Length: 74
Image (cartoon, rainbow, N blue to C red; front, top):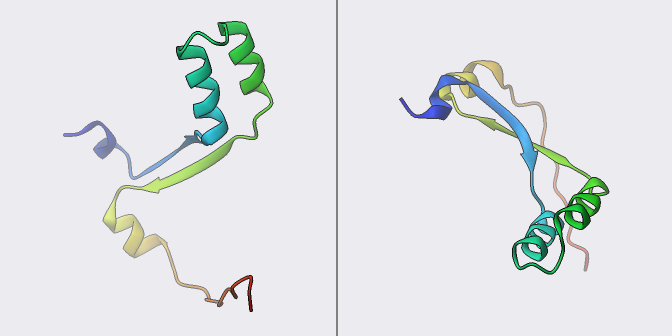
């Protein structure tokens, strides 16, 4: 059994480009640990929801509506 098969739904933080840039600055030795941690403190964190179990998708999620998003040049 793979680790994620123990769960139906996994929720966790997503690292965006700012986080990757900060980690890169630390790994390359440009910023020390304290500078990197200080930078990370100010980033807005986003969560991701991953539904791993197909039964959950089929039985628990329901279609509610759709809408069309226009392009910026329209």
